[in-house]
Length: 269
Image 1 (tube, rainbow, N blue to C red):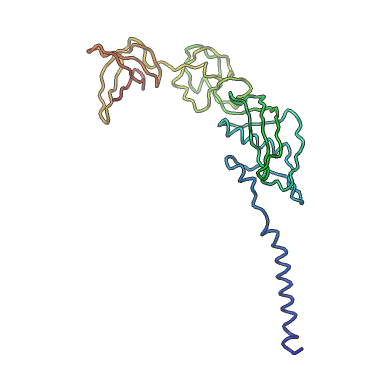
Image 2: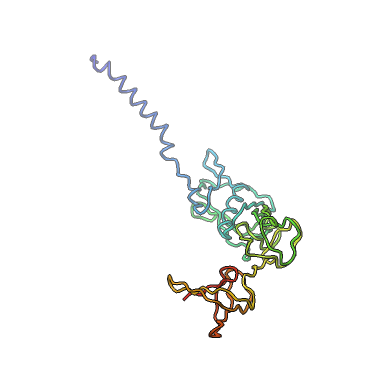
């Protein structure tokens, strides 16, 4: 062995050993699967969590099932608010081997909308294959801000921020159509009386009349960019956005117009 071989051979061997060790360390990272759980639920965020063991087995527990059901129900019914779910019966954890791409699909749910005690039929898929099917009874609540009477409101009472306030309630507790927070109360009046602290429903309200029968109103006749104003006689009572029959006092002809303000209607040609 010459001087060159004796000096450089240990260095080459050490370099080869380090490269081999480094490849062994980085190999699991290079082969690590992309998390397909997030991709399986592209419609909703966040992705369903999964408990993954060191052997690659996924355990789908009650929390994972409820999270998946929540996303599917929100998308199915276009729900707004904070949906909370729980299972009526205990869920037995489901273990899937190499099942990180699992997804839950609802097959049947109430047709008339979500209720506080819905039953849903769903199945779970993994790797493109169906793992099993379940029918579960749920307990559901949907918390949203709605308008609530701050005092006793009688029929015909006008509504404003002093007579009503927003309150977060479970809108599934009663099968009623509650008045949502984005409703403009100024165009409504009470169709029937309600007590203090009672959430308002759609049947409690009616459009406040802006045009009344036998009153003269301003008629805005629009054609393109041209607007002409004339007088007309209202043949009915109507609120904002509603159609009402109007009579031309000169020609005695009747026509339909849309209520756009107090004693003001509009006709477009």
